[in-house]
Length: 268
Image 1 (cartoon, helix red, strand yellow):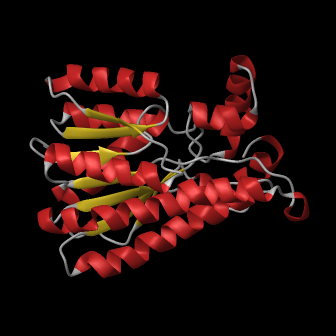
Image 2: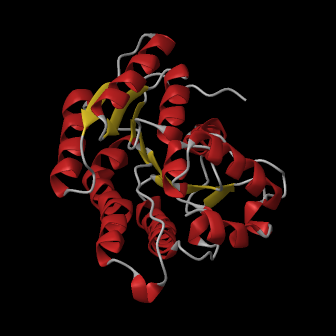
């Protein structure tokens, strides 16, 4: 199955590491013109440089905090001013949180999670929807199986991802008549610095934790960033031209296993 994104403009948020980085590199290999957004300037520019090596197409790197309206507005404005169009929006930027029980939760954590994971996605999509309608483009929201799995210590994050899933379905209905598809890709446990930070582990401890928790995943191993990137590309491509309003899980069957108990004890 061939994928070609030559002359397509793809905006990826949270592109400086993890799933966002893997997704940026894969789209670059497929010829896309990239707008990459992240908060860590050094990491973002390093990813942009690697993307340019793939096909010689220099990405636009935007340093912005999508937890602020100013950062979201800057992202939309600079992308459209630079490329004059948009074909694919990948809403990947997110923050995680390892929390205590409901009655002990710090509301700042709740606010931070919802500001970036929900409000930022809502506003950026709102600002870029007209451009996507013009190109009959599509939107991929990066969700999480935490939206449907119940595990202690994940309340704000799980709620935010559940909201993102519902946002996906509703916006897909709003934009279907305009020719714009809206879907979500929902990763399970994915090897990344994002998860490592939430566990608070050293490198050795994190590797040991991955090995121990993999037994709770029916297919026996966690995802890597490229697993998620390949699904994002597939859903964004013409091979999925009638797929909309869908939440696609990439999790090795994790949602069917007994992973939530281990997750409650060890991670986010």
